[in-house]
Image (cartoon, rainbow, N blue to C red; front, side, top):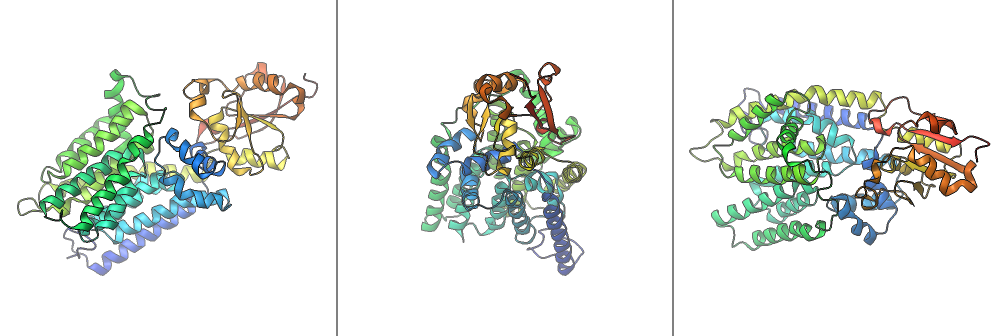
Amino acid sequence: MMSQSLNSGSYSISDSVANKMLWLLFISYTALVIYGVGYHEPWRDEAQSWLIVRDNNFWQMLKIIPSEGHPPLWYLLIWPIIKSGLPYIFFNYLPAIIMILAVYILMFKTRVDFSLKCLFPFSYFILYEYSFFARNYCLIIFFVSAIISLYPKRFDKPILYGLCIVGLFNAHAQMFSFAFSLLLLYTIDAIQLRQIKDRKTQLSIFLQAIGGLYLVPYMGSNKMMGVDAPEIPAIPIAAMQNIQHGLLVEGNNGLSMVLFILLCVGLIQKPKLYLLLAGGFAGLFYILWFIHLGDVRHEGLIFIIFFTVYALADNYDTVLFKKSGILKYAYILQALVILLQLKPAFGFYSNDIQTEYSGSKAAAEYLQEHSLQNKIIVGAQAWAVEALLPYMQDVKQVYYPECERMGTYYIWDSCYLSKSWLYAPDFAVNAAYQRFKEKIQDIVIIVNHRLYYKNEVYLDLLFTNEQTLKGDETFYIYKFKKGVR
């Protein structure tokens, strides 16, 4: 029988064999992530947070953060890294390091079902999506792992547990309702278990409430709320797509819906955990349907919420409701979900190694190798061209024609709300000419789609990427032909 530290169920293998298996899988996961991340080219969303921190002082950064739609923790974490002058390549490895720590905690410091410990690191979101991209999703996995590990001792170590809940609140806006549900459940358990009179428990509840609820007024100033939400009649279709991407990444809508329903039913023996499930999904789906359409990385939080809730299930065993009931079949379903994610996980992992994810690095290197970085750089579309700038420390600003401004990072309010981000890249040619025609031979135009022939006749194409995984970050660099006036 396996020990509680490795698995809460029964297996015929010994503790030592199980431990060796986990170490072998952990080392394999670590090697895969470290190797793969070295080939990843950061894209615009990764560059955005880097540039916001690099090009602002601390208080300016805090003022900008709400318009980004994210809590401040990620920016506070990367602040000393960027301000210390570390190279951009380090940014690639930061989420990988955080994810490796999170997976270690999950595999060796929790009571998660043994089969899920073996499979979880190789799911799509853990192996690729949240490990390769320098964004705040890695913080979600870290704090979720810490919460799962501390949960049996949450009243023995209430301050540490409370700080982990605060961390989850501040990791990502789409986890706010899930973190709030964990706070509510902790309070309910404290009352029922007669821990509520303990001063440390009271302080933990206070820390969780203050450390999370301050985000309501702080993030409430976000002017981007609801700008790309789907129309109400389209919400049922959006919901099916959300669930498909969130569980299977790729595959059949019908199968994903069946798995979603069965995983919900699997908690019928743990009624308290429906508070977490309902709370987490209510906030997540509200954002996906009414605030921001999101992408697979956002929808993956469906998988993470399910995994977390089931990982906490053993803490609510009773005489009547034990793991030997329907719950064990739900663990099998979870394992099936991860197995179905293996193909996209290793497929995207392999593609990112073999093909440029973003053409930003190659385009930036071309500019520097040909001494073009100090020319008048005009970039369109602005939200794509910003991906080049972290590679070019000596480039202070680029002219973004659809925003009608010089800058580095993308200012959402100035372009997104005005819909000028929809302008075709060809808009940049005339805009560049009108603004800088006195220095026309010093203009370098960078666009993320090839220009129409009627514009190319005035320009020389200097550089382009052949292919990138991020199709709208295949860049074209132009200069006006000699003699054009």
